[in-house]
Amino acid sequence: MADSCSCASCKSSSLFSGLMPRGVHLVCGLPVVTRQRQKIVPLAEGDVVEIGFGSGLNLPHYDRKAVRSLVGVNPDDGLPDLARKAIARQDLHTELLVESAEKMSLPSQSADTVVVTYSLCSIPDVSATLAEMHRILRPGGRLLFCEHGRSPKRDVAFLQDALNAPWRAVAAGCHLNRETGSLIEASGFALEQYSIYDLGFGTRILGTHHLGIARKG
Image (cartoon, rainbow, N blue to C red; front, top):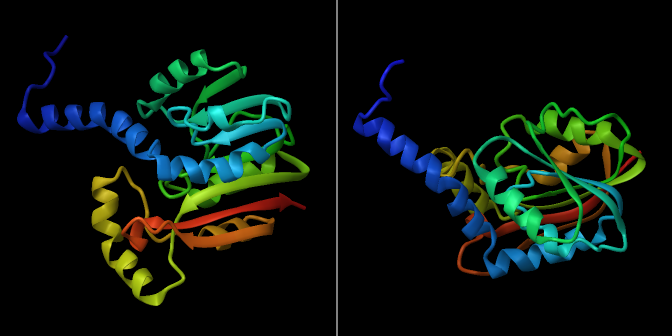
């Protein structure tokens, strides 16, 4: 068996991959972000699938009386280890699928609600993922979303476009400028509620939020 590589670049890459999950967990668990989750996650009901389950930060916000079952979907990016610990601490039975949301193993029309928070920004093929969400939802099922994305303000959007490439390089593929609502509509959903707003914590480049409810026809 060959010896493991000990070069500086590999050590740096290994260190980054080890720190990334906890860094994402800390940033996505900030109080200002938690307040956004609380606006949308409690609306989930029935058989629920959460895309981009991450470290399980949405778990405390589900309505135990409304949710019949919960399946979390997340790639093998280090976060499932944290998610399993979060699941063990909660009273909501949750199944965790470690796989890509771009091609899920879940049956068609198996969910009443799909929840996605702070994940559409970083999924490589977002259109394929939204198509999969549409596939697994039952007729009339709802997609609940809370994301950061493109600002409707021209000057802010210009900066988002300019900074998107370097930001993606340091932020695990996260996009600053995805137009969440347009992407959802293009995937066959009808937007029922949709708000775009700034968090107001010092930057609109990262803090422009897209929150809403879309329904499968």
